[in-house]
Length: 150
Image (tube, rainbow, N blue to C red):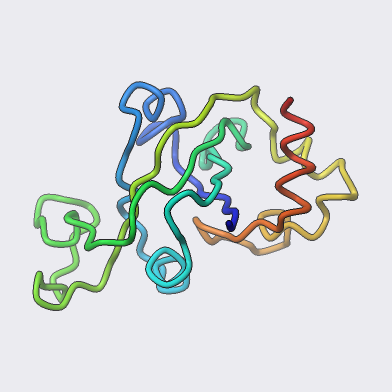
């Protein structure tokens, strides 16, 4: 089992939206490294730290799990979508998504709070210049964060 931190803008899909829908497609990823992690590495059942980004107080807002194997992101084919990619075709899709299933909402563990713990200092999300929307999380960091959220 692997663990991931996956960022979502709460104005688009929040932890409350995920709780209401139970499962959502993780659409709109337009970074090759993040796409490759979904396509090549993520497995059904992997743990997800659901992270609110691009908001007043970014941080971990809940726990989810990967619920599907990667499949083509349909927004890449929709000319009305802000995620449209004219060079992508159904026969040769560029962008993938996975489904993510709600596990539980937690109190917000803010980015500022995460920075206070030396045990989390090596987390990718805390590294200067880290902007990926999907990052791996070590088993040690996962366990430590689970303890903080208990």
